[in-house]
Image (tube, rainbow, N blue to C red):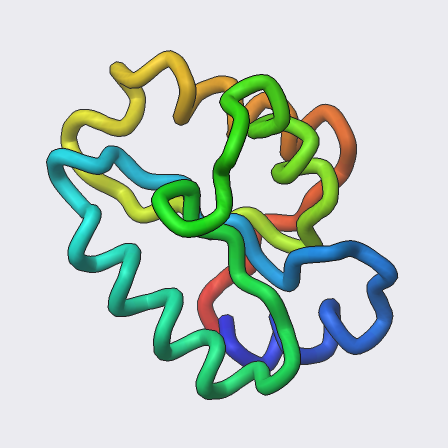
Amino acid sequence: MLHRLQRRNADSKKKYAAFLSHHKASCAMEARFLKEKLQKHLPGSEIFLDSDDLKDLRTLLESVRDSSALVVLQSAEILHRPWCLLEMYAAIECGVVWPERD
């Protein structure tokens, strides 16, 4: 996944290298850890994590569209969360890639 993000980000004009989609109650700590690791391995790249970057809920989906990749932290609850579903829908709608495992 990391190699694909590096290649995709190098070719992209988007603000964020990745948007981390997660259910806060289940994966907040894991999302924070992943953001730190991705920033370490993608120097100079911005990784979107709502608890850090979201100032206005109305701009959430625009942040998805302005990302090179959507990274979904899977949990039992994620498909029951309306905002997580909207993030996935926005990514599919505008062609944001879903990094696959290497």
